[in-house]
Amino acid sequence: MSVTVKDVMGRVAIAVQEDAGFADIAAAMERFRVGAVAVVDAERRPVGVVSEDDLLLRETGAPGGPGAFLDPGRRREHRKAVGVTAAEIMSTPPVTVTPGTPVRVAARLMHERRIKQLPVVDPISGRIAGTVHQSDLLRIFNRPVEDLRADIVDVIRREADPECLEIVIESGMVTIRGRVRRRSQICHIVEAVRAVEGVIDVTTEITFAKNDLVVPPLR
Image (cartoon, rainbow, N blue to C red; front, top):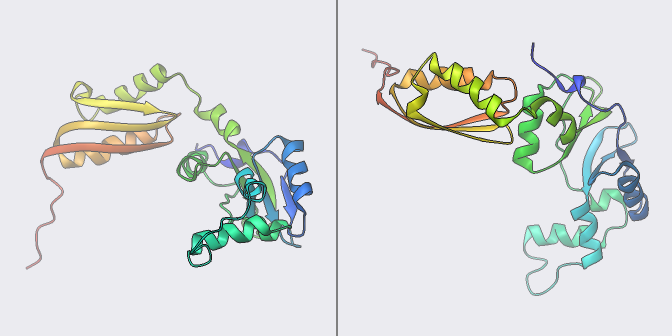
């Protein structure tokens, strides 16, 4: 059975209201020892996130110079740098998950967005229900690399010769390179490797000798 966010999430919702001030946000981060907090509206629905980087913009000063108000990205940074409330400082939209989100999906989101925690929202009400941290997920994916490699090799062996493939593992992200006889083998290999406990996602750079997935043209 797939492990979901509800199995590992913290029940404490690390969040501040939209009208929270700079000091309140910094205090929340220090209290919970986190690098970001969700910003919620009056109904406790996440509307944004304030990170340490957002707070540092205020400390380092608003970006200026010619064109500061012409480039959309610099305009956003300027608004954050002069903002005094969470609503003015936050980044939007927030990246969230639900209790039923598979752990591997949450881990992939954190990896792709380069964030270490995610607000967990109730799928019906949209209200914040807790927070899942990267450390929570690592308890599931923190398998020794050699153990993970051994399991991956075993499942690949059912479809192809693993000696013909290079397997690179980094923080649960698996990259497979090499060549197989048939294109259909690639699909089976990816599906099998993704099912291995401890694998977050799979990227393939596999070529093939024969394309057995070609669909004949309609007549």
